[in-house]
Amino acid sequence: MLDMHPDVICPGELLWLDDALEKQLPCSCGKAIESCPFWARHLPELPRSILRDYTTTEQGVFDALAAREGKPMMLDLSKSRVYRHRACWDWEGNGFLFVVRDPRALLAARLREDGELSHELRRHRKWQRRFERLTRRMGPRAMTIFYEDLVSRPEEVLRSICSFAGIEFGSEMLRPTAREHHFLHSSVSPYLKGSDQVALDDRWQSELNAEQVGRINRKLKRSSLYRDRYGLDGTSARPPV
Image (cartoon, rainbow, N blue to C red; front, side):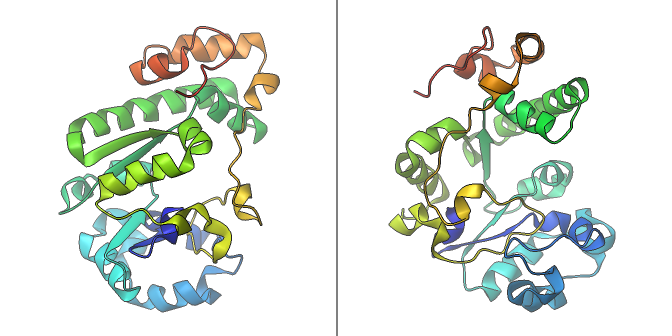
């Protein structure tokens, strides 16, 4: 959605470029990264050092990519590597958008991919705590939104994100299938395959049994963010407000 904005370019998870090339992961357009027209323009301009150590990536790499696309703003999706690359926390003009979803839905998705609940639950709790601390540290430079709100009220949430980022809302953001995107090392939501309709994914309510839900609730209810929003004291989530 944000990649549709005329002032924004989103190349996906740029800090994971080394991993994407090593594993020969395709661009989200379906082409190999080396043969994708978008990445064919940018790969030769990127410093080789970031393929050896992503923490050598400097702000100028992001700024230069955005400038080549004629965009004043870049959106990176690298998540865990953004957290670990702490030098980028204080880059000039940086902001952080934290998208929160019901943890039961997230963990059900991991189990769908043959994950093991105990492992996935420990991993999720660790990263949830890290990102909550990061958003508190960043104060007004960080914004938290909820997936369920984005699904139920996309224009309202997108307008609030635009206000946070200092850009004007554009209706084209509600039509992300209108053009091709080039996301690196990133999954593509099914709604991008021919439909702009975002639908709530609540399969966890039928996929997780009571014992699994209880374990998740007990492990994560100490997170005020989760507790206040989702309750985590029963087998169903509170509706979006």
